Length: 129
Image (cartoon, rainbow, N blue to C red; front, side, top):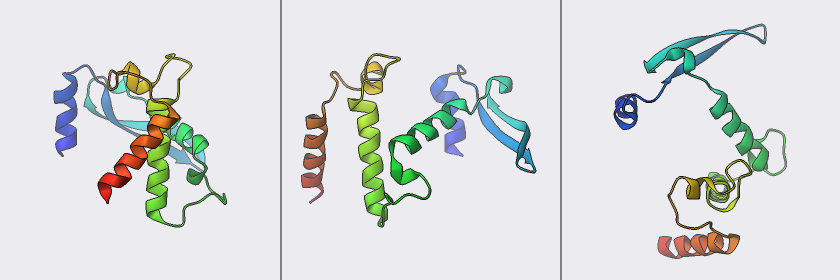
């Protein structure tokens, strides 16, 4: 339950946080139940998470069903996801913000290149050995 308590403390009441349970009858959406944790429950939305899930599935074929690009080992699947997330957040320029999310958030000082990403992967492999 530490997560539930940490959210209000971290965002100081400026967040609308809760849970949305979508209701279906005979494979048809009929409504939703909102469980409020912090803020206004009518402003809770799953659209950001749904969009993130779609982006991950579309940019990583290992996350789609019925594909021959699947990982046979869990460790390979985890490595591929890590590569995908580093590229998406640190290398790829996003059209809406004209930079990378990591640079826009102030996490890094410059946009990484694919060469930088490769060096990080090699360096982390050496550190793990």
